[in-house]
Structures are given as structure tokens and as C-alpha cells.
Length: 217
Image (cartoon, rainbow, N blue to C red):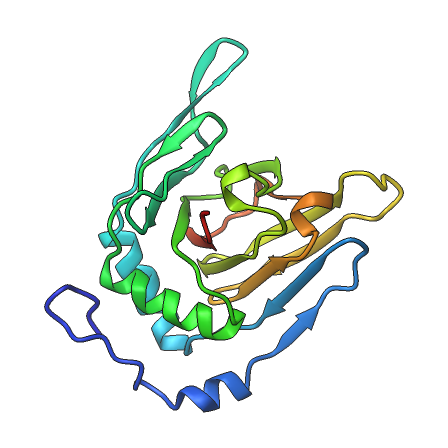
């Protein structure tokens, strides 16, 4: 399937009901949070096609951050897509939305079906190798509202995803492997009480694209 503006997107590559019925769901048992991990909401072949399409069609940017008075490259490439006017600010980086492209609308429709929630924006991160990462943080910016639903979809190389409680220091960290096509949904009080990160790794890893769908008030 080609995901370009001249192609009518279709959900008929496989029986959609069959895919949903075969989804493996893991509910994390953690205090003060609601986290669900789905094995995949796309077929194996389409996971590969979606990765290639996102890699080539998304308007990737190298943002910069200031650290101790120095301007440094963000350790990953990013992009922000969404409905008109859905501006997003994090780490002092102000992002104006690019208009939706067909492949993102296609993915969004499937994610909304699984999450049973509507999204109006998505932050994309491209982790080129193990040196690319994202530090401990919570998705708790004011524009996301109280108790936001965050749907995090991964394509490409497998990376470790870690969670730690903000208050209960005795609570053990949670570590998950986010695989090709996996969908992680965080909701309820998760962003209020937990932080998460993708740490650097010295192990050889393939490039990874992550999409975190959000609803901006």
C-alpha cells in the first residue's frame, strides 16, 4: 500500500475484526496509574510499510535545547502534526502543527479504535540509533488537560521504556520492551504520578519511530 495524497487509504488489507480479536493486552499493575501495552494493532507487513513511509514522508526536524548556557541538539529528530491551531510547547520548544498527511490519519484512525478515544495531534520522534534517547519526563503540560490519554505507538527497532514513580521512591521502576508495532496507552493519573524515559543504549539497535497521540485542549 502506498500512503500518498493520490491514493485512497483503505483498512481492508486484512480483516479488522480479526486483528482486534488477536490483540495481546498487558495491563500493568502499578499504583496511581493506568498503563496498557498492546502487542500490535497492525499486521507485520504493514508495520514495515508504515515505518518506511513515515521515515520518508514526515517533516523531521533537528530541534535544539539549552543546557547550562549551551545550545545542544535534541538527541533525536522530531515532528509535530495536528489539527489547525493545536500548538504544543515542551522543554521550551514551541511546535506549530504540520497539517495531517494520509499515513498519519490512517494510523490515527486505528489507534483511536483501540484506545476508544479521539486525538487531535501527534508528536513523532525518530531515534536514529542507541545514542538517541529521551530523558525522564511526564506528559503533563497544561494544554494536555488533567489526566490526559497518551497513546504511544512504536515502529522499527526495539527499545527499552522505563517508568518511575515521582513520589514513592521505594516503588520499583517498571521496564518494558517496546517492539515493532506495539501500542502503549497511558491514562488516568499516570502523568501526575509517574515519569518515563527511553534511555540510551550501547547495544546495536535499528532506527525507531515513535508516535505519541494526544488531545490538545
